[in-house]
Amino acid sequence: MTSQATAASAIRKAPASQATKDEPRIRVRGLGKHYGALEVFRNIDFDVGEREIVAIVGPSGCGKTTLLRCIDGLLPHDAGEIWVGQERVTEPIAGVAMVFQHFGLFPWKTVFENVAYGLRMAGAPKAEIERKVPEFIKLVGLSGFENAFPIRCRAACSNVVASPARSRSSQTFC
Image (cartoon, rainbow, N blue to C red):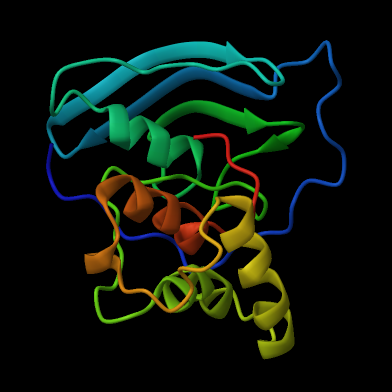
């Protein structure tokens, strides 16, 4: 797979209405992506229901991460449509997050600072960051490690720290 574009800087508002129980939470129809002459995937169709768990399996370089980045709106797709709830995905969506393959932690920042990073980048006020970060840390079972550095955490701890640190919300689908 070739290098991928960086995330769009604009994040649109979360959808006002969520999908009903009968509608899929995520709908992908005829999705295609290419980088120049390299076709990454084409004609991808699937639905993901509310609270359904889906695994995307394939060999290294087959386009799994590219597909997820398209669904999250981090990469533009070249064909087809993606819907999350009742909103067509054309750019990153507030309230939707993706946990990346690599932890992406800043080794020089503490657990607290790493978790706060996503909120800071989203422009959250300092008071909101000070209120929410301890909640996220407690939610993932790391209370007491707020001042620890990632090097002191085992791999599982680093993955847990990276999840809220990179999220634009506490809700994830990828």
